[in-house]
Image (cartoon, rainbow, N blue to C red; front, side, top):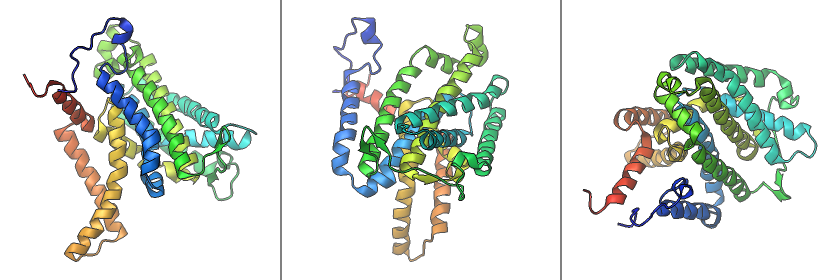
Length: 358
C-alpha cells in the first residue's frame, strides 16, 4: 500500500535515469545514511564499534569490489586477499616514506597499485575462464603472500616482519577512537557504494553483465571482451585495495601477511555467494552475515553447552563456524542461488503489489 509507484511520473530522461527510481527508495536510503552517521554513534558502544561495525563496513567495501568482478562480470577470482594486501602495503609505504602524506591519499594510492596488480593477473581472463581463471588468480594470492613475507622492503625493513601505523589524522582530526574509525570507514563505504551503484547501471555495467551471461554473444554485438574484463578487474581491484588499506590502517593498526591470507579470499567469496551475486545490496547482506554469525555462535554455543551439560572449547567453536558456513553455502546454492539479496527483492516486490496481489 505504501510502497508503490502510482502517481510517480517521469517527465524527463534525467528523472528516468535516477539511481533510485522510486521516491520511497530515495527517502529510505537517505534516512538510512543519516541514521548511520547520526543515530548509530549515540546507540552503539565501544565493543560494537570495534567488533561489529568497523569490520562490517570494511568487509562490505571489499565484498562490493569482489561482487563487481564475480557477480557482475562473471570472472571467478580467488585472489581478493592478495589485492587487499597490495592495497595495504602500498598505502603503508606511501604513508611512511613520503613526508606529510595524507592518510586518505595514501589509501587511494594503495587502491591504484592494487588496480595495476589486479589488471596484470586479470590478463589470463582473456584466454581462460571458470576453474582455470580461479587457479590463475589463486597464483596471485600465493605470490603476494611470498613477496610480502620475504621482501623486507615492503614492511619498511621491520625486523619482526610486521607493518604498523599510528597517529592517523584527517584534516586535523585524529582517527584514534572507535567512533572516529567508524565514521571514517562509513564515509568511504557510502562514496564507493554510490559510485558502484551508478557504475553497474551504466554502459560499462551492461557490458560486464553481457560478458557474464554469454561472452561470445557479447563479442558478436560489438562488446570488446578485453576491455570489459580488464576494466572489471581494474575497478574491482581498486575497491578491494582501498578496503585492504582500511583494514590494515583502521581496523588492525599492526599487521603481517597472514592478515590477508587465502582464507580472506574465500571469506570475501562466501560473502558474495551468501549475499547475492550481481547485487550491490547483496554485498552488504553478505558482509553482515559473515561478521555477525561468528559472534552469535560464540555467544550462543556456550550457553547451549551450559544448559545441556557439555563443555565448549575454542576448537569446538571454530569447527562449528566452519560447519555452519559450509552448510549455509550449500543450502543457498541449492535453494536460493541469488542469495539474501533475492529474498530482499522478493519482499520489496510483494510490498509494491500488496494488498492486491493480482
